[in-house]
Image (cartoon, rainbow, N blue to C red; front, side, top):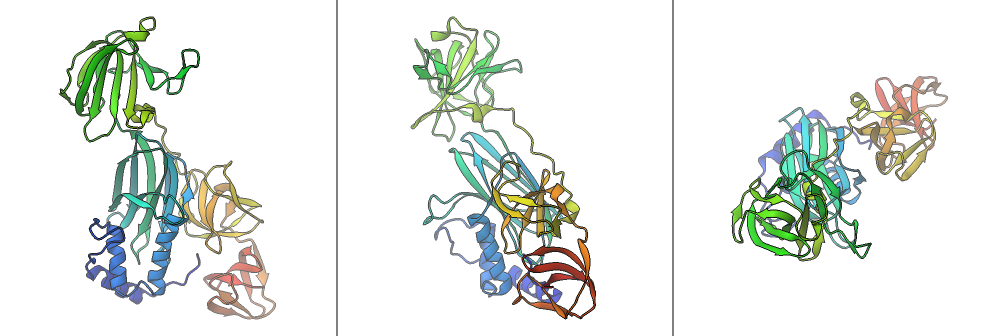
Length: 440
């Protein structure tokens, strides 16, 4: 959290070495796996002989931290943050996603186009003895990752810049339907959902019912092939469509008329039939029963076609003070997620020092001395001086709240310092245009 800054000459020299080296040919994910840009960059650091240096070690440690100790967020999510050149770091996010969602990840860097940011999407490790599985990766000044979620569960995102450059960023993680809506027009409505009781509770609803006018056109929700058209007592006139490249089938039931035949190829948006109330829906208003089936059985189709997606909260916390060390105005609670009801990580006494890493909604993502990370409401932090204090005996200004940490300068008896806050027995101060830790 509080590492020493490197000199400009050293930064420039190291950067030139890293950029000049080619990536090696082996991969952490297997000999023939295609390497991500993050992996290629890591190879260059190693080839430059920097992986065991303080600078390189910090970069690799930050990369591992983002995967092994990510912070929990809920989708949709938006965050504005800043990576400082003198402090190699990475951000890790873990969030729940549903099968059928299309995940859209956008990262905008400032300054744009001058610093590489690496974004990697992972499936978390299944156990302590296994490793995360890479799902998708990108790098650029305007990173876009689009990924169709294939099973319910958590996903993991790592964001990390290259070494030796400061960069601000705004990241948004949102979801969209992975299939087109299967009913034409804006007048339709979903009137019955997955899991609703049927036949007095003897069975549950394996799909959703979309209501609209009689003979409303029904549309192919994806490019694919019609695998079956038939009629039965339960679904009436039905159509099965297999989307191209997928392992599941789309099921359309209660049609008044089928317009396609088995084996026919269709494109997304093609009219394949008309809405009706055939089968066991003969006494109900016209609707489409829409279902999805895979080898494991029925799947909730709502995430696949749901167009009603909320937008992430706007960043309301002040982003002009990111990377600064601030103090808590009162007893503050550091939480696992940026919500008021999330689990507490640590309860801080008033005037405790923390570093602002990023802002999301009305919260800051913070790092405490010792590198523990979490979230705190922005209204509980202040950049103002806590008190002025006269030094009673010669003191040393350290770069961390530790008596064995590097000494930045000596403060003589009688000098007055601005005290910003505390951590344990140490106080964080400003003195002669320097900031650091003293034991007073």
